[in-house]
Length: 294
Image (cartoon, rainbow, N blue to C red; front, side, top):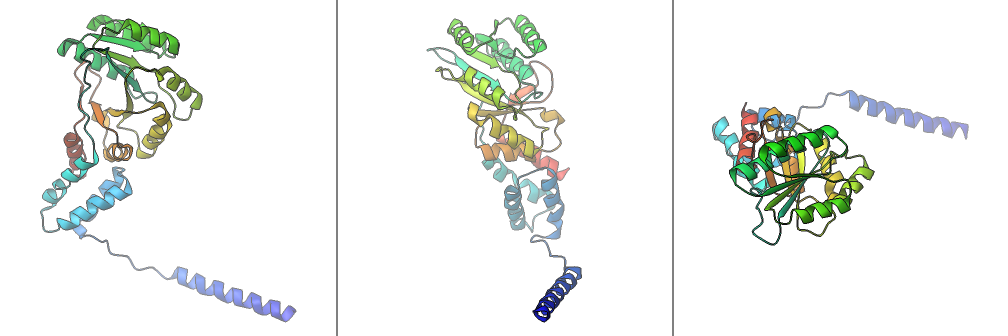
């Protein structure tokens, strides 16, 4: 029996020695499945945080453009990126039977209050619509005062509510408005209690749009965590802030594509009401292409 054990140990040692030798042999460098001139763009797509399957699709398109000049070939990717995105157009105000109700939700620090002020100013001053503002962000006194200040400047009423029932009452008082915008407190995607509280506020029978506001400077993994956390609240559209501060648009494109919801607005600075525009897939695709060519 001892001899058999020694023989078995010897066989194991031999196997381990063979494996060790194989691991020490340098592996040949596998050639990339595309011409070398496209390799830098693969690396830039990875750095931009595009989702891997989207990168593979774009690289396959570049292989088809192998005879093209570099910039021409990369620019040819724009239609594919545009197809990944849905443009929802601007908010459509009601034409009778009560106001259009739009709530902005999202994590802390993305600029929801400033975004809602920009929307209110544009609809009131430029589109000449009757607008009402409601805030349920009672966690931050400064946010409430900020919105009240904007309301005074723009010339629209601002209601502060503390409970879901108070929100319903405020909406009843705004029944004659064309548009009612609801500002909400920033919620951590890891705080289920706060997210359930938000869901309770927005669980009312009136037709409404819920726009999830995200920062374009957030990395793709965290964007996906936020989206997953806010899904139970109900998401109708996506808005991205801080476009002017972003240097990587791959995460934005990947998140919008994965969620499959229409885009609404992009913000490009702090100025109210100027630094906001409709989110057009063509403009986003061009921004990503410009990043890859930079």
